[in-house]
Length: 297
Length: 246
Image 1 (tube, one colour):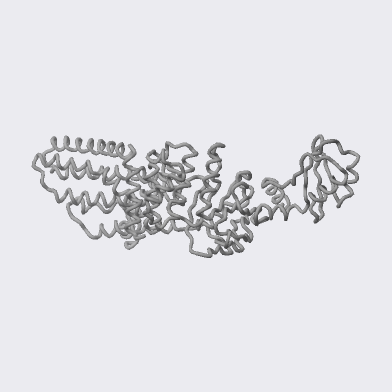
Image 2 (cartoon, each protein chain N blue to C red):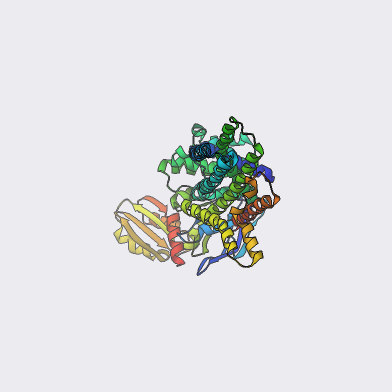
């Protein structure tokens, strides 16, 4: 992530009686996979359409730091059902004034469409249609790839393939992807922006957002034996609180700036307590999303 | 990308899709069957009446019926023009590409005209059949075809315009009929108005007032200018409509 490719500054958009976007600011870094999250009605599609030039914003600017072309895969892939895959992709290349058929052959291979290249698009499965949609988005060599819900409606097998494909594509394109599948998104995104009620409530890497949302450290420890009598001593350490998860597994929380893992480690060593496992508990994207959107209601 | 290249790309795609579907052949068969029926009836009629020429008794009523039928067929040919793009979410693909709004509209419109010509084409067999019995007034056949095609192009541009206004096939058909009939009755509206200038203007604007000379073997610039301005007006509005950003 070297430099900014797209900068959204103070984007505002209203419809009669409804403010959809009120001052959206964030940046998409060149070469990154940027996840774009938000509950239904948050204004995600409106912002994507503004980026694509389909909708005009009332205020604000979208600046590209360099001349960039955009490849777009909407939630419903724009496919001509009566055309064959190869014929359709050639048409898409043509309307983008590109005639590099060798590159198109590479795209077909990359998207796993060799088997169906001469088949009618209308006869393909949902997974294949999505791949054709992705192929049309990249066949004219765009700098920025905008993917709107690319994994929606796919079966688990197709989701895995789509994730792999997006990761592969991230080597050559900057990707801006919106999705409700938070777990999948967390596996492919370098950065995320969370849009809620028309404003960006969180923006950055998952770690940065987690840090800003959750100032406390959480460590989960499993002991070999019960440590009931020592819990009082542990609580006295560094403003620490605990909860039992099950059996000998406990979750310790601290607001302190000291590293909780080493504080606990030292204590267990001093008291000669046998520890089976110890791990820091991170917020997953789902938790981040829930917290970020709840905090800003 | 040049205008011509954009139009050619889109027309080619449209025609490829059209001719790979059975609908165009079904339309052509039905149209030919109906016009053939009218032609046969007219021929039977002039066999019984001796003082009517082939042109007046068989050709003119056949072309007149063709004109009416094309008005019915036009909305059915054009309904999918933009409605289908909207329903299949393919319009953003075209709008994001290097093809401009003008090219998108004209590409589709030219494809519609080619489809229309394909439907009309088999009707050329009727004057050919007449030629076997000595008919050789080809100039009148030619002017009739020019008139019919000119009017049909007007019907098609209205259909393309209407399909831009909605996402529903039925509404596109109803809108096309509505606009075409409104333009058709302008002449009778004009006749009932006392103001001579307004009356003449309304008559000129009416679609029904531009076949008279063509049917009699004459090409009048008055009619050609009308067709060009009618098509020009609706294509201009359609291109503007395509370019409107929400």
